[in-house]
Length: 370
Ligand SMILES: [Fe+2]
Image (cartoon, rainbow, N blue to C red; front, side, top):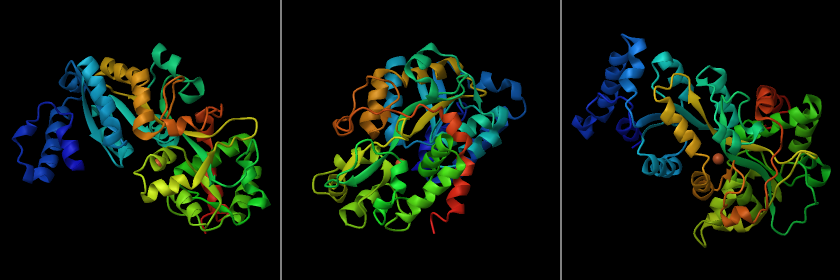
């Protein structure tokens, strides 16, 4: 299935994909790759003229097709520009490294600040100056020179037992307090959602304070860090823990799940509180995009990136996956809207990204997952 999506959208216009029998898909994939390489390899300078057909663009993304396709369909309906999408589960960076200057990618779209900025730092992006993007996206959620742009926000919040009374102005720092001993649940400290939060804590508080905070949080755990974010809600319902850290969009999924389903029961067992770092707001991770370094269809790519911050597209992000729009004033799903406004930590994500490696090392140092 995944293979067929990739084949059907393979950005190699000269290859006659319709002639390929379905039973030969694996071999066909290899042939298609070979054909593309043959076309472009002998004359690198020619690549853009081979691929830059008017009215299309090539998107590489690690996002789920079910989430992204409605956005792309809406864009094509509005502009007539066809989007050839390569859906990748893993290996975006490896693919870009392998393709080098021959890459036909116009836009690279992924989740997680770390993944996105790794792509930028590896030289696979080009700066983009766009008044539309700059007007829609706050400065701390995009590259200073337009090398990357956040398109949606994924805030990391506290799930707590719905009957629990939590203090006003709860902070991430509070979770290390002794009063929460034996009450916390969380997934692995090494998961990007957590290393991103820990990196932000380092940026705010410094490494030494973050280490003792992490030790405090570990001392409060009700169980070993494991599972996913929804398991925090599951384990609150089961009485294993009282509170934990997880992303907000899972609340949208759980509370909107079929009535009576397991997920709906998990969602109904919890309340959601958005903590802060004290003075600063709530930590967010992002989904985002960059204009690819060698983008052969640059103008069309810019049109899609600008479309993705339109009110219509931002509302689709909010409705399809309960992510928080990066643009202000866009309608939210009622479950997310009920949580109140999101006050985003104003620290530039590039600052947070600097401490990702240190965050991961601290997780090991304190034996967080042991
Ligand atoms: Fe997730």
